[in-house]
Image (tube, rainbow, N blue to C red; front, side):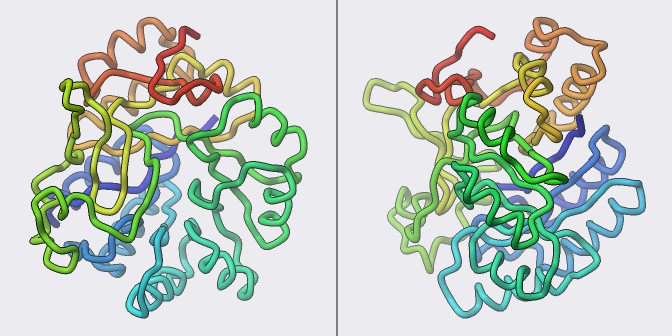
Length: 297
């Protein structure tokens, strides 16, 4: 089973991003997803910068994948999409069907990202025919639904599962971080730079509820399938995805690698992770329960 680092979902200063991926170059990860997949107003790095990082990671033996923006809203977004796809030296993760259409027309292999909402075998087969060589399971999917899809997936199609991080739940044309500060989206003052792991929202009873990340809404808790590695392996999952956070990402990758190699059991891994996580863990979606539930393996 391989280990992947998902795309950076947050907005960090330019130098912090470069420093982060310098560290990732030495981390025990097989695949690294790169690029701005959340918001078109995040301009600390351009497509050519992401391609530069991709070249450096490829030189260390890792597979670099460039991701496309999830919500395409304007002509400039389409131009950026085209620039990402034009980086033909790297596999592309398609996060909307517009990207799939272009890649299929060019007969290019691609990764079907988690936001394509593949919930049945017919959709999975269609994407495979269009050129998908890997698909990423939607974060809301349960292991029982995955089991059915695994039984019907096309030969050679890899399966990747989001296994750690705050859950990316939804996207909106409205920027909720800007709205929180009573700002217009087009004059957001790049407030996301102030929240390297998103803006935590609590209920009136002061219970942690959601995390705002610009136009993306995330869970408040951290999805963690470290205790379900045996389940994932039995289901024939090929790749586990870890989502970057501003601190301890390389340590978390070390723990997952040790768990995959069998040098660390689930209980010891959970203990080590407790001090590194942004928030309390959850795994409810995996068991077909409310996502914020924590179910014993």
